[in-house]
Amino acid sequence: MSHMPITVWAFTSLVAIVAVQRLWELVRSRRHERALLARGGREHARGQMPWMSALHGSWLAAMILEVVLLGREARVGLAVVAGLVFLVGQGLRLAAMSALGERWTVRVITVPGAPPVDRGIFRWLRHPNYLGVVLEIAALPLVHGAWITALVWSTANALLLVLRIRAEEAALRTDNDYEAGLGDRPRFVPRLTSG
Image (cartoon, rainbow, N blue to C red; front, side):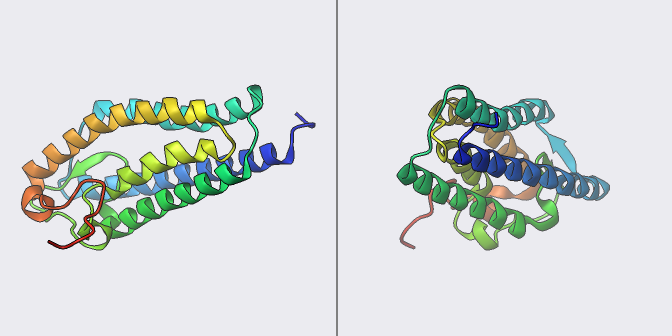
């Protein structure tokens, strides 16, 4: 391990920072979950959480293992583009967290009767958080050429998100008049014109 290139150490440090960020987000989510449940919130799609936790945790480990065990090299051009895409993903997720405030959680929790959040990034997209996750899962491994991790975990994430979004939108339609508030917004790609 001591003879690993500096880029591998730098990449491992970057992944560790992302892991710490995810742990901080879980702590924040737990606090929000308690507050929402105390206000009469209801949790939906609980069975999806173990799968999501496994996917995200294994993604962090897999990209490092791929880089170390398969000797993936960092390519400057790819690293720069992937790094920028990853930062866009981070920006989308942070914008979603900011707009949702206390209603942001990693679990699907709705408070019946609460209006849907339609401010901030939600003026343009229904699912900026999930778009951000899609970009992050694809891009971060590519910073150091871990294309297998990018491909496999992106595919698994896409399959899980189909179920997740279906469950979340059903819950929001039932409890929060979702279609009236956000039904005209695109899910992932903002419209370039207002017409």
